[in-house]
Amino acid sequence: MEQANARFSRFRFTIRGLMLVTLLCGLPLGSCVYLLSRLREEKQEGPYENFDAWPLALKRLIGEDANLRQDIEPYELEAWVDHRSIWLLRADSPLYDRLLKQNPFEPADHQHPMAGRLMESAPSAWGQPRWGQCVWYATPGYGTTFMEGADLYLIAEDPATGEVIVLHEWIF
Image (cartoon, rainbow, N blue to C red; front, side, top):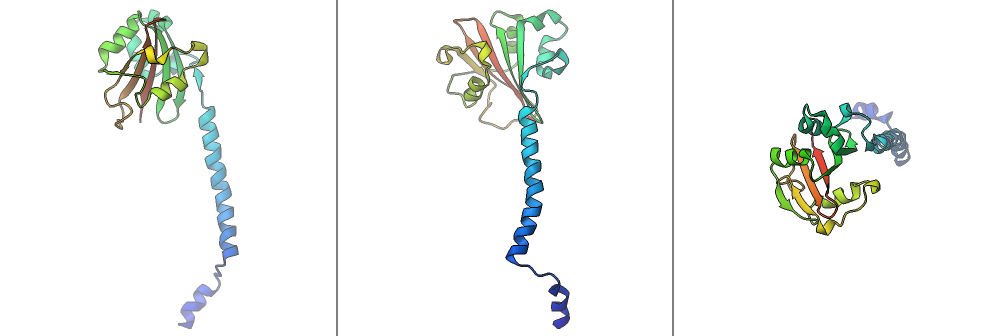
């Protein structure tokens, strides 16, 4: 038994030693996590710089009709692993008609699980619609069911201004 104990005798685990190891390993790990979170926060939140950076779902909606690009103002919210953006467009735009025809929607309201995210994400430059008076539509299950690889939408149409705000999310 003494030989077995002799093998482990050079490793003396004390509370002070364990705390030192934890500190030495924890600091770099914590720094990496903090750095990644800061990079994620700084990662391109704002208007898209060019059409190539627009979400694929939006580019598919526009298709070959380059004139439709004038009807929409997309704003990037997140483009890390999942993609999230918010769009402003006119209710009388053909692009809005395409969006409604090409995707399944169900009626929603300002109490929708994702409505808070839409309201908080809308840039102040767009103005603040009266959310309670908006006509709302959502992708079935959006905000209540986890769905990978699907384009998810929450739409708030303000009848007073004729503007539509669309929250788009694509989960990897």
